[in-house]
Image: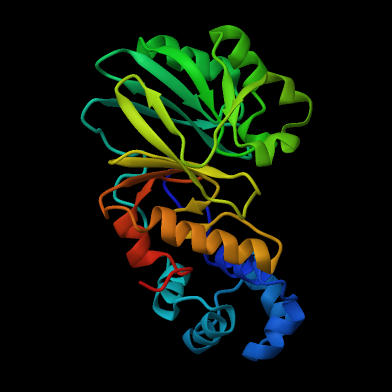
Length: 281
């Protein structure tokens, strides 16, 4: 399981810069660094002095204190694998090799019914975990359509017979796997996993059809949010859209709500409000 964040200080700076369509040279000029310095920061080769971090925060619209803490590696979530919740059986699976992502088995303890969320890689590993859990998979839910979140979809669908659902805005991203999609996850829908109820909330930006699945105690957020960071965007429009969606749809939840992201450790709403440099709470 994870012992470090998905995104380090350099990633936070790079994502904020790219999302706001700034070049390294332009940002360097604004904060009194060189383009070479910026490259080293984003490549984890340089942590600049505190005054330069302050200027970076101001130029990028990040929270200065939280960015300083990111540079100092001062934050790591209390429960990186999540924690138990009444009536729910949640298994976080780190899938892939080299490039890692999180898939999930989410089951209802009362009924034994379950869903797989984001079967990105390692179909055999997922199926072994399902068998060990004693749960019956009845549906496959996709937070978004990037290949690292859906690559094992065909094998999982064949093995379980479970239908897959995704937001229509991301269907085109699934490519040849589109034939595996049997239904839609539309904003405002409610998904039942046994007696567990999840609201589908639109959290676009990383992709046009990105969604989060929100229960009163937990949320599966795909690549909308990582512990201490955000999923990547490449335009100002998408960056602002994602920032607003995360602030309004996720960080407005109860502070104890567990957030299960598509990469890196699990976190909570309260921890993100306290530590995430992208947000000023």
